Image (cartoon, rainbow, N blue to C red; front, side, top):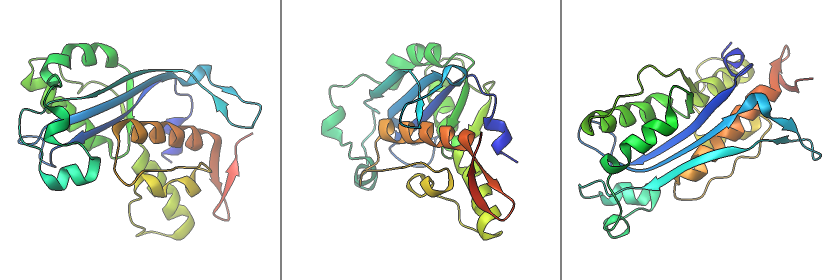
Length: 205
């Protein structure tokens, strides 16, 4: 059960990247959001949720290549938006220091970490290949199959809420910050609920 991987976690970074395309060898990152928090310090809130504090790295970059219109339609970032922004290479050391050796969590984590490693290597910065990674898409997909049977489709970020008892809202255009925040919400939901025999969601006590 992937759920177990999310229990007992301490410090993590919830992560999302937006890019110019899907090929990390040719495409570039245009935005990164990384939310660093220590889940061992999370406390129940009066409303029944969880209180956490986190540090943020969030930046939009000039990718140094044209941003295709189909990519801009996804995340809303255009060439005009990034003309005066610094490049990923200029921020690479700062971001790598922020990440350190902390566990990374993302929705389709392989996509995000592969792009980050490609950018770090181009910038001459140590990649994050040694960091532990966890995938919310994989964990929620496992829950969906427990409830609905094998062969269920892989869930988009906005589709995960009902399977972790969490309200997940997503704008029409993707934002790295919004997506990273939703990843963190899903992590908290995975830790606070489980799928019981009979295939229904139960709150952990």
